[in-house]
Length: 250
Length: 296
Image 1 (cartoon, each protein chain N blue to C red):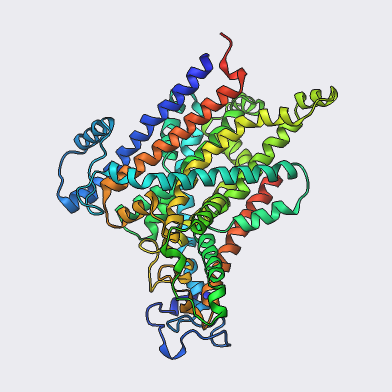
Image 2: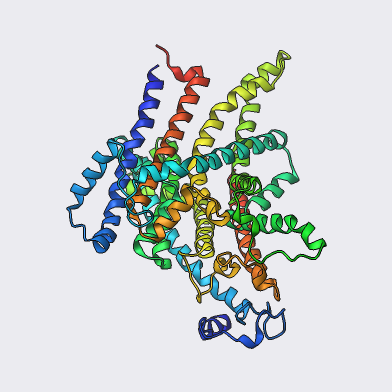
């Protein structure tokens, strides 16, 4: 609650204070201030809004598209499967990053668009993984038993196959998608032209490669290094979480 | 033979599939285009015109990036350097992680954790940090005699071999490419080493590595092909951060200037490269593995 009120009371545009440019950490400014005298710690916190919400949106979109296409193709097989899989493989043959660049160039650079586009761009991977898993289960004993009990195919598919047997797989893919979204968002915002732009903070644009000035933050190196460390930490955590769930699955 | 033909046909079938994606793209693109240049042809007309032009090898003309110049000649001029980067990165990352995986497969090893920790670094950050290091290194001598380096990156200004080396390494290992490829290769090495024919070879005292190498070639080819789209995406970032001239930075600028014919042309070509890589991987598998050549 305290954090929420702190974030909502923080105004990204009017925090500029030329009297305290590039100061090292102090009790008032825990991570110091950047080249415009803005509080780095608050901006770091504020910047999480740039990837957490849209990342979850991307996950939802990918789940909706990837799960449904993968599950339907895996369950019904035949022409349905080859049609759906032709669609997913052709979408997958365009590099994801290119798709996202095109999307943000056509529909504008707001984060909702980026989230939806990232979800669509990731869905072939999820669809492929779910398809491969369901094909191995389709003719297995427990599915036959469930059919013999007279359960509907929807129930078998959603509960017995997807929920009981693909949870780990889906969770791992969602984690990967979240890491992928953070990567995309910081990359776009960092290089500039797309993604989050000043004065709105993002871990990407706080690093400030766009202006190519290593000397710009010399008074307070933390203004550059704190977001670098944060990105690295989050991505490592995501990779580690994926790794442990892989090992739990074996 | 039957299987080989099927595989090739499957791979070729992917190419019109990626053309179907142009439908989606040009549908989206159309909104922007009609808005900006007042083009009001029906969507299907435009789509079929694009496809028919495409079959004649014509991708249209650039609108804003280099107004009036054919997309194909623009791309052809800067494609060699970009493709060099992508292929060099592929070879570098596959060969280095293969050597590492050969040593670490099935063992507890600190190098796995180290590789994961390092290669999780996003491509843009890794390229930037490498640039900072290389720059301070290059100006080490001038600092000693009291000349301050300029505040921008001097190395950025020329296409030096240092920059290209950084680009290849960063592209090959960054954004967890290194650890993902490594763990994939490790899995297939473990699978092969625990298989029956390796046991048989060991039993008759033969050397094991020729058997392992021959059997790992097929999964390795598939893995290489599957990494191509990632590297094509990453090369955009690398070229942009390191200020290299190439198709990647051209695509970025085309997207920024809303030059959709150029952006679409590059997208189609990158999809074609991905499909070609898949075809190549399938052909390699058939070439290496006699079982896939079928019975008749």
